[in-house]
Image (cartoon, rainbow, N blue to C red; front, side, top):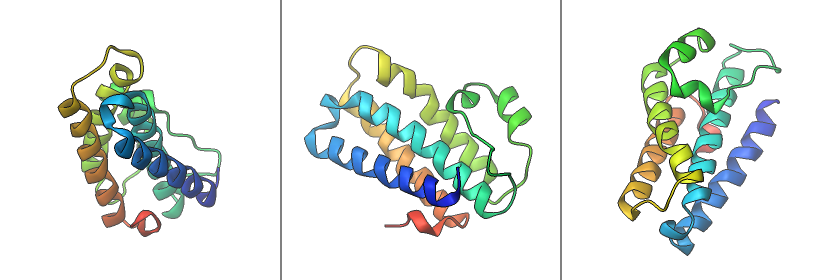
Length: 134
């Protein structure tokens, strides 16, 4: 996918997250789990494409972030804020399947995922992905 495709997907996910917040995060935990994870991957791909570090066919898979070994195998390139980005993506991914497929979680648990996602979004902007600002 090209940068524009990723940016459109990010926009869609951000809209879904915002709608879930308006409806009540405790009623939309699956939406939060899915869209924070997929959007994080889209942001990473968009940044890597923007920096010219990967080919258009390169795909970041959310489940890589369940294993530091897998992340080190797949994300070998250097880029701004790499360690912080990977750390936050791993923290979001730890909660993804629990939110998407598990029993209802507390409002605080879901809110923490949103907080980490918003922090991650800010890190991506700081790393040069200004297109997602706002």
